[in-house]
Image 1 (cartoon, rainbow, N blue to C red):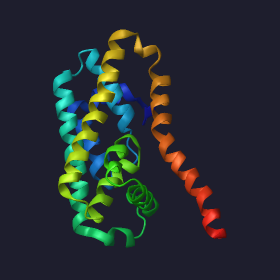
Image 2 (cartoon, rainbow, N blue to C red):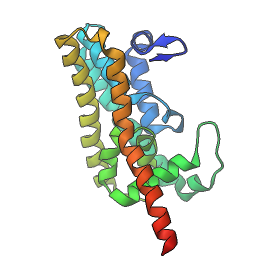
Image 3 (spheres, helix red, strand yellow):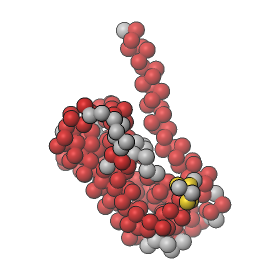
Image 4 (cartoon, helix red, strand yellow):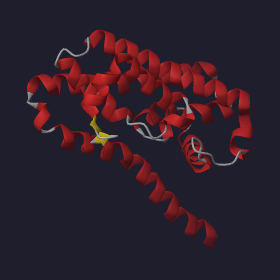
Length: 205
């Protein structure tokens, strides 16, 4: 998997810990982050930590803080901007259909969406914003955000770290990353098809 002709491990090595933290923050707190490779990024960062390119404790703590702050920024933005968010036109960094998808998922799953969204590309970018729009209780948001952020960050980074120590992961890195990407999009695809099946039934009624 390459970005601008650079493999993901090479890219992460070049941007360093600060770059990893910014990408995680952007994906969870800024509109422009919905296309960023959060899951595979964390896994590969963990693999690189097993090769002593990153300090594992510093990586875990720094990325966790970035993930939590990203969600808090998204929540506060949604809380203050409110419904104006859903009346704006599409732009390069904002797609209304993504925000609507996150809102529908949030309405269907309630507070646990903040936890589940961590593992769902696109949805995790907009879920905290939608929680702010919906005026979700701040205490509940804080708890779900911390729990979800901890499981997401520690789970993926430690998986990469321990797998990197156990096998010659370089030989299998691309298939592993592709598997992570496919797995992360499965919940989104499932919801999409479920919604498509539900619409004809609702139309008949």
